[in-house]
Image (cartoon, helix red, strand yellow):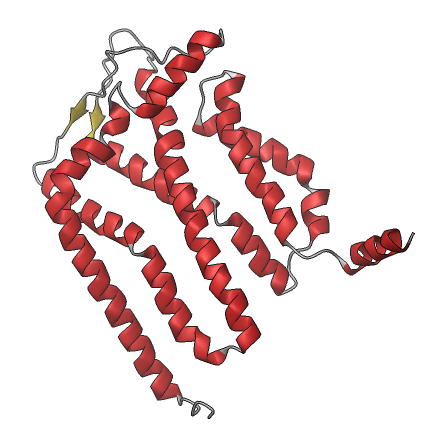
Length: 273
């Protein structure tokens, strides 16, 4: 039995309920985040500002084996946090609860998007799109983990320890720390969507393998500059920690996109030989 075709107003009503369910889920998770935020702030958000953060311990062990690396064995490292706005702690409590909730319900948002568009798809399209949403969720969370566990701590460690003059004492405001923290995590989550975006653009005929192959050298240079900006420590090892994941995403994107018709013909010819 076929499903009756929905009218424009039926689609609009379904979209309204989809948005309503997303907002309710966001509200519930934000309340939970607000409740646990004091613990979460001290043990997760502020963890990179302390010397015992897991990345610093790992880098300390490596730096003892590889000469020339920055010193990560300073047990006295601690970011001096200040607040100059009376209302900032309360509003940061609210806003951070919202952003953490939004991060956590990303898979549910994608599920709701899937449920909204799935009636308009054929069976074979449903199978492909289902895996696309799952892949997109996994890559987004991997990017957020990389941003939290690698990108933000390395940037924080360098910039906080950078001294323009001996008479200047570095202190970080609450707003500056939180803006950098949230921006880097969400940006890295979006950066790790590059293979998915490349695949989607390939499906509609905008991107081909030849584009990535032609501009591979340009991409390597851009990624090196980006990695140097993110971790401006100057040593090759730290630079490679950021560059390698970014370049891996680029190569993975090449693997996912379609080949040009000419490339496909060449591959078929080689197979016949």
